[in-house]
Amino acid sequence: MSTDTHDQNWLTDLRTTLTHEFETQTARLTQLTADTGDPGEAHTNAALIAATRQSLAQITDALRRLSSGSYGDCEKCGTAIPRERLEILPQARFCVPCQQKQNR
Image (cartoon, rainbow, N blue to C red; front, side, top):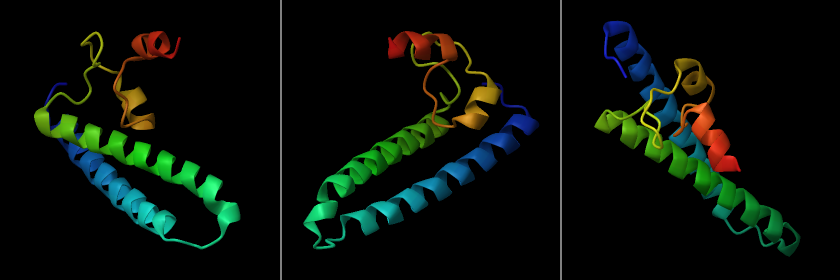
């Protein structure tokens, strides 16, 4: 990804957004893992915990890619992921064609 000033500002804002989302998801995970004592909620709670952990892993990976300088590059083909896609899905690892192949 190019590193002109406009992109650097966007990446800084993105890092802030991802860090805030990481903190939010971490707090959510803490709440979900607190024992409510209600066995009826156990299945739903387990699904929410799994989804939250997956979200945290994706955010952590995006932050790692930002730090290493590989953010915005498709992990499959190496092409640049369009900024529009990254704005909608900041943790995207693949360009749309590679993501579609991955989903098959």
